[in-house]
Length: 172
Image (cartoon, rainbow, N blue to C red):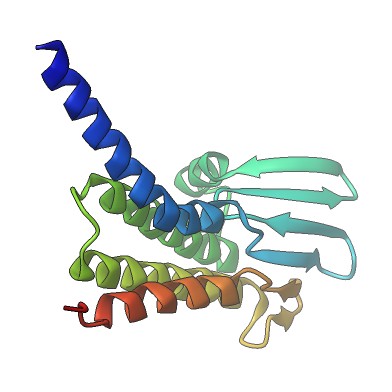
């Protein structure tokens, strides 16, 4: 019984070790800054990751987690462009988290898994981009301020890498 259990744990460990190499890119996407932004006419500045924003404004420093954004959206504090922007950001984050969960739930890394992972990463990047455009305009510049989407290109690069790895034919 102990031998079977140790083999099972060893197999799970090897599986996670193989997945951790490719899964590391997914975890990087959660942590990298998506955008640096300036609020209005230098009223404040901030940096945003997929699940939080850190901003320094006239009213002080704030760390705003996505859970607070969801609460503000539900209670109606956010309205108009801000509400649409936050809604798109929440959808993008949901796609990113579901990508990570689906990646680690699979038994082994296969070509369809890589394709699905790459597609979901790119879809998440598109929603993050749409979120920024909804708030700041098509050129990331408008009355609400200026945004520099520094992390979005990395989403497309990693998503494209997964798609290309999923399209490779196996070597015999």
